Structure formats: C-alpha cells, structure tokens
Image 1 (cartoon, rainbow over the protein chains, first blue to last red):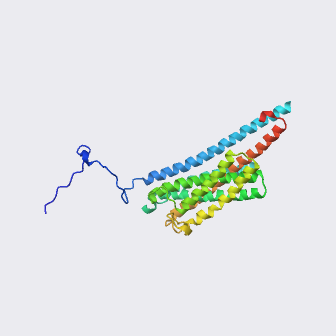
Image 2: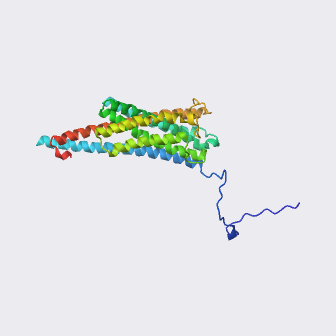
Image 3: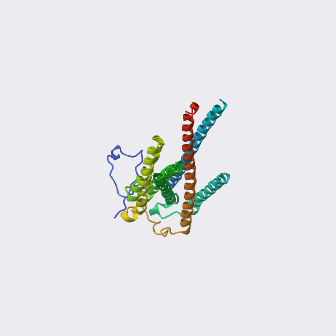
Length: 82
Length: 236
C-alpha cells in the first residue's frame, strides 16, 4: 500500500469552471451558522425598542392630553372674560 | 394626590433599579445553559418567561376591568381594561419576538406551530384587536362594550396557553412547570426570580401610566363635549 498524496483544496484561482454547483441538495443537520451571541443581543435590542417605544407613545399621549387641556382652559378663560 | 405621586415616583425608581440589576445578573452572573438549550442564547429565558407572566398579569387586569365594565360602565373601568390590553400587546410582542430568537439556536428554527406558540400568538392577536378597535372606532359606549366583551373572551385563552404544554406536548420547554426544578444552578433560579419581580414592577408601572392617560383622556373628552354644548366653539 502506498500513501496517496492528500488532495489540495481548490482555490478560486485553481478551480475548474466545471466544478461549480449546479444543484442544491438538502442535508440533515447542516452547519448551524447563527451566532448565539447575536441572537441574545438581538433579543435584548428588541425588548428595549418595544419598551421604549411604548413609553414614548405614552409620553406622546400625555402631551396630547396636556395640549387639549390647555385649549379648554384658554376657551374657558376667554368665555369668562366675555 | 401628592402622596400618591411620590409613591408612583418611588415605584418607578425601584423598577428601574430592579430591571438594571436583572440585566447585570442575567448577562454577567447567570451561567450559560447546555448547547441543546441554546447555550448563551438561553439567557433570553430570564426576560422571555417573565414577559409572558407580565402578559398574563396585564390580560388579567383587562379581564377584570372589562367584566366590571360590562356589569357597570364607568370611565375608570374602561381605562383599566384599555391599559390592560395595551400592556398585554407590548409584553406579548416581547414574548413573540424573543422566543423565536432563542428557538433559532435551541430548535434550529424561528417558528413552529407548537401548541403554546400558536395559542400565545392567538392571544396577542385578540389584544391587538382590542387596541386597534379602541384606537380607530371612537369612544362611544357601544365600542367600549364590544372591546370589553373581547377583553373577557380574549383572557379565556390565557389558561389554555399555560396548560397547552402539558395537554398537547410540543417542543416548548417545561422547566417552570416542574416548580423551578428544571433550573439546575442557583444563579439561574435567582435570575429568573429577579426577572419575575422586575417584569411585575414594570407591568404595574406601565399599567398605571396607561390607565391614568386613558382616564384623563375620557374625562377631558366629556369636558370638551360639555364646553361645546355650552357654546364654547373654540374647543371644537
């Protein structure tokens, strides 16, 4: 038995155009590339965005109420002067 | 009034402190879980589960206030029902977005039509319907009653979410249903306990804020109507 020389991996420069993939085949247990850290950080960003967005909407609503209250106050004062 | 305001400010400060501590502890102290549970992505659990609990709490507030409104209509009951539905939507969205991010690592997919996931989605959609109804259909008594009826019916789904894992199985983990026995490290149990306290406080703060705003808005709308009937055209 003679040792076979290890096959060198093909690079972009040495690859034959005929080696290009012409089909994709589904495999079981394919490489999982999603980073757990990225998912964790994404989750915390989502939590903060939702909570801060909700607080901002609440603040905006309060400002709207204050503006309406101001209008009512002005109308009442004007009416009282007349 | 002054005392209640000071109490609320103290509650907000306490909530901020506990939420900050939760972030610190969950990120830096709680150990990551085994790879099959998502590894470091399992830390999402310390916000995901308490958020689900906060959704139940908000849903319960919506249910009680809606039922009370159907018995005897008042602005206060309507305001709490509305606040409950709004907070249930926010916490529900947190659950429905953080869960899939964790699932991507633990299960390999973002979403699967697991019984608990499906019933949770259904519940959030019911609360979204209430919020949309109240936002775009005015504040007449008929609209309020319809929203209150939805609030009562929507909350019936919450126990189904909770027991769906036991009754129908599925992929969703059941570490909490074992009385916390599924968390094999004391720091994990501590992080979850802090998570429950933090999200409960946060839910209370948000519920009070939204209910106050809704109540003020209702009262103001009545005053504006009275002013218009009295001939104050500037208000219109």
